[in-house]
Length: 302
Image (tube, rainbow, N blue to C red):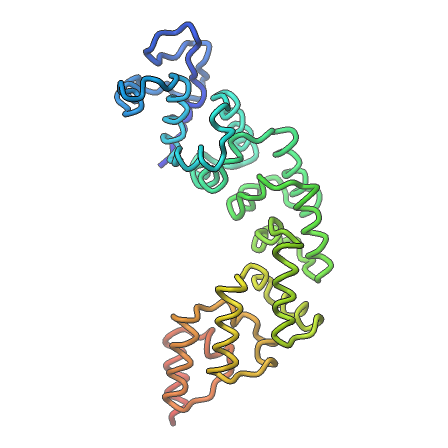
């Protein structure tokens, strides 16, 4: 578990004149952090002779990421800017996010998913996102944490080029519930309109639905815009139309069909219905719990 004490590694870069022992000067410590034991650095594999070519500052930065339960190799690979980022700049990002209501335990997952955040510019990258949450999505500051935990990618998205255009497009589709967009479907806000959202709408139309029918389906089930065309829409629609011999009308009224597992839910329950010669509405077949489903099968056999 990531504890506040561990963040001292991000704040305690030794000065150039210091010895190889990674001691922490009084000027670099704050009352909010507990100095890390020297042994954490000295006994770490990065400090062995085989890694002596790495600078002490870089070693400390890597260890700091590891102490926050962040895969430093993955983070450095996905965000090369981390190679040159200072510990002070990374620490300022952490301090900023904590000031917005996030807690230390949130950071490993957030940075692990989006290591780019660690080298963001607070004024030009992060502040605009929180302004967008307040002004456009009407999210109060005490709920920032809930939104960011739901979708950390918001912090790496351009307000001008991504978030505002996506919100405008989703509103035009009929998704005007700001609470739903903020707290449940915020991943749609980081989805590219031209490359992600529109192709999915067009694919639904290719199944035989009209544009208005697709729009209504999306309003009824916004998660439709998060499903993969290749891994969800195509195989599930093929099974629905070929094996189940279903009608488009059923999907129009129950687009949530695409949210269920094809192998573990749809096929299993459809086969049981066929074997028992029972007819059930698509929604009942999939939404009902296992106990409810068995009860429905039993009633249908009477």
